[in-house]
Length: 209
Image 1 (cartoon, one colour):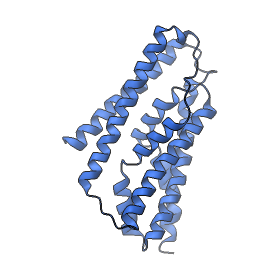
Image 2: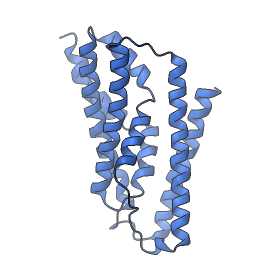
Image 3: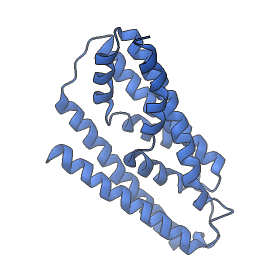
Image 4: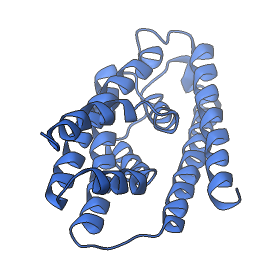
């Protein structure tokens, strides 16, 4: 019973974890490229899979292989996530400008890409906060294997949360709702600039703060 509650609670923690601001900004930068909510939802699933993969790998290294990672290393991980957010925002603005030059925004089409981008972003994003999560699990649960189960359940919860978040965020950019090219440009620019600003904040806090 001592370990049952943390294990059951892991899914809830994972679900709410998906709605943290840096996660939402990253996924918003991805789903603005979609005109189909279904494909955006798949992006959310792949993001969650990538995110869970990184956390699980770090968890296995720390809890099973007994490899200790210093807090300073995790600061570098967090800074790397900040750089990724900046790159996502800049790349999104650049792509929108290129499309505008070609007059493609007059009829908004989906940018051709698979779900590898979402998975890769999730992989990098799993570095952010993974150390704190794993250390917390190590103190609350009695065995390494209980910790791995916790992280797996946490991963399922985060996948569900990001699935929902990506579906919601994609609606303003869907082909049925984004009838105005001007509105689409404004939303894309706003989400991209937020991504860049928050990314700069994360880099500053972890490298210079």
